[in-house]
Image 1 (tube, rainbow, N blue to C red):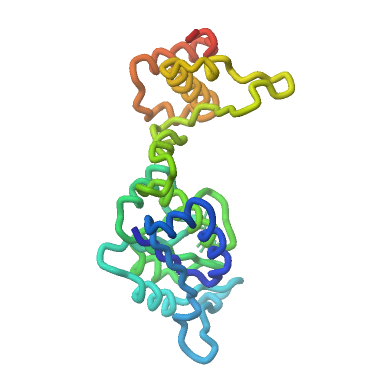
Image 2: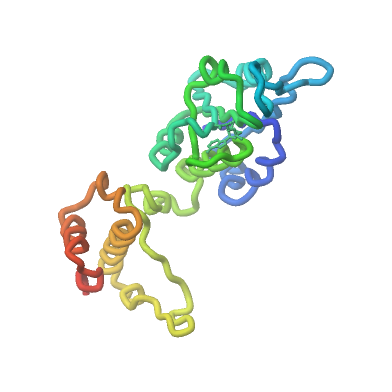
Length: 248
Ligand code: SAM
């Protein structure tokens, strides 16, 4: 997969994209990522990328010409051009999965008051928002999308199954994790995790994943695909039962 990021501030994305899982995925050729400076596509001696809005009002707007030139230069057949924007479709794990199946994604970062409306209307395929708040630029949003998508690409994670166990992969939050020591202060690890009984551990994890989702994100349960046993557990939670009453 290839991801191109178009930004006025390449320095804000360069370093994070060279580190950890994304950095290693790039080195291994799992994903090809290129960052493009929008200013390189602006014409004239001053390479102007932004202007005040027609009709007045504060702030600056990213001009259409440099954005059109940048998108045109990097776009290949089959690419999806995405503008990061608070008005866009909400970015979720499901959207990350959708993008991870594409050969080429171009992420366009807005700045200032945003981009000229004609970019939104004619030059991008869709808009994505990472949440209901306003950032100063699309760069952090582009990093969020790039990292969430890269994790899903085959070969990106050391443990191939890890992404399938993550929160939201099955529509639920993930179960709690513990590591050494077995007792920290006077807080012990749940004994089942030390039992060595993998079937029991797997069942406990499914129960705790469901419990955490029921407590914190009950909205997810409305669309989660639950097994009959999981549905029974949810019914028990609704009747006031705690997980410790449901399995040994
Ligand atoms: N005036 C715009 C508005 O009210 O919708 C906000 C512009 S914001 C200061 C500048 C840029 O940051 C946007 O063009 C967009 O690229 C990016 N941005 C801000 N919040 C975002 C969000 N929640 N998701 C994705 N991109 C965002």
